[in-house]
Figure 1 (cartoon, rainbow, N blue to C red):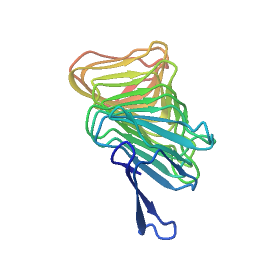
Figure 2 (figure 1 turned 135 degrees about the vertical axis):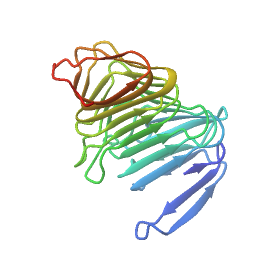
Figure 3 (figure 1 turned 45 degrees about the horizontal axis):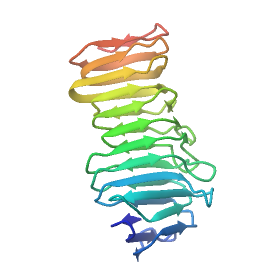
Figure 4 (figure 1 turned 60 degrees about the vertical axis):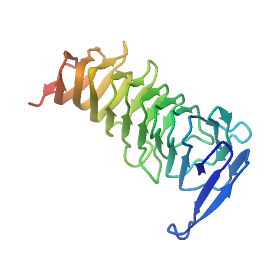
Length: 274
């Protein structure tokens, strides 16, 4: 799905029998689109304007997921789809976009998820729980925006192999108090944000990578939360404060910082690789 304006765009449909074959359907002056077929992969690309996109359970068909939007301040075409089996990609194109992920229809969303604001000053809020991964794909989650706020519980362990989480920001990436990321043996990468604020983070058999590229950068924790990882890698132009007693950090592979560094391992068996 490609939106060119609030009510026009195009749909490219790939055939199941021959994925190299596709056809294009243009639409204009369209209030709503309902996709009743279940696809393996769905991509939704918004406009070059300032878009506000809300993803939620469709109140008129609770088995489907509804995309509603304000495009340049005006209501855009509503899109209702069955959750794809393998991957959902949501793209912002240009403009200063905000994405509010409030829910997914059906029995929950289990495919891989990519949300990318692309150009502009963008924000993403995850306001629902995600249990990613299924018999077809690992539960990978990728988000790219200047501000990313995780406000629900994320688990990437529903597939045969645990999925990875990759959050790339600009000014802020936060996992708020009461939210969590759990990959077990998957990898978590939180990259390129001035401020990284961590709630519950669990990759107890995997690795956590943190980077901040501004001179006033900061990595911190919400009070009372734990970072539980097998390996930690951090490169921050600023302070690193992972000082909660609830932490379990087995190995610090590498830490680079131009500020103060405090890392506490509540289990008392921290090792540092030189």
